[in-house]
Length: 165
Image (tube, rainbow, N blue to C red; front, side, top):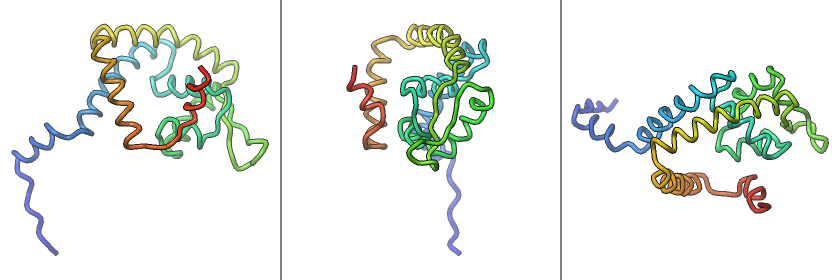
């Protein structure tokens, strides 16, 4: 067995300062905390809000297509959907074309929950933009979209939705 030398403190600091993933995750956690604080007033987290919103945008979408849209693996998506289905906010039904495919749609309760959450999301969004600045967010949003499409290329279901606007 080959002995691997211990990582020096200097190298660990260098990795910590330069790791793209760490920087993105730290920023994501800070942003998530901001949105979660506001959405908690209606019993939601930002992860749940974004799922409800994405399902609403499509009216009905398969789990596979939603996972593709959100750049998530299906197992993680299914785990995150369970409390939304259990709460009666999301309906998961077999596709009429293929019973192996599950289609998702918002129930009337889910639409109500999303509508209740929207003002709290808008407050969090406005606070985020005030703290970060519209110009900074505009550039960062564009750059993040570019990174997303570079690392996860291919068509997304929303490409069709956006084209309809």
